[in-house]
Length: 288
Image (tube, rainbow, N blue to C red; front, side, top):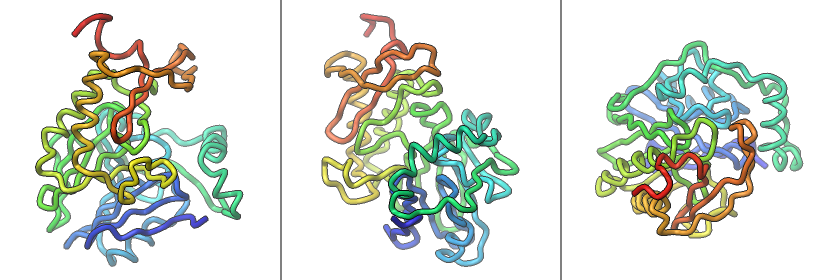
């Protein structure tokens, strides 16, 4: 298995698929380049971006603060992240966390002869917070920050309005998103974030998620992108889940760190779905 695959999606836009487990994106602007997420940090990302975009300044943004999206941050002196995930972004990874990443994500890569030699994940020297409405200006491309608390409290989306490109991080996938984590937002807040994105749907030409696996693509969608209709699917689906108009199924994932270790629930949409903690919907039982 390749350590990193570079996939051209549009003129000036590439997906970087790291060991088939996480997706980063590169946009080549007239004046600056953008790297969205730094994955596991297995590859020299500066070299990759410069090979694609030339020797120009690289702006690095994390869609959220999880280790499969920000472990390569230490390759850069400065990284931007949503303001509510920023506090977690300064923590070095200890050996136990590195082992967990290896055991969880790298099994296939290592079985096929991959190497972790030189792998040294960690935080950037400086992490700067992004807020709703901030704009990342690359010269000809301008990406607006949209705060989307859900999968994590500090999750953000980036929207390039001229092209209609919407980069959503882990907010929506072709399979169920984890919304049951300790630092996930309650389901009502997650739903409000998805409704905010759904209200933009007519201006969106394509949605670019932060994970892609061919074997987890039941709708057989074009690789590395989702149709704009997925925005309403998630917004409407979460509202239906809150109203119990669609079935909650058991989700066999135990969250001991959340203090319960009990069974979570999941709902599925025409594309993807969401797992959540039934004790953290944001509503009282029977409330509409």
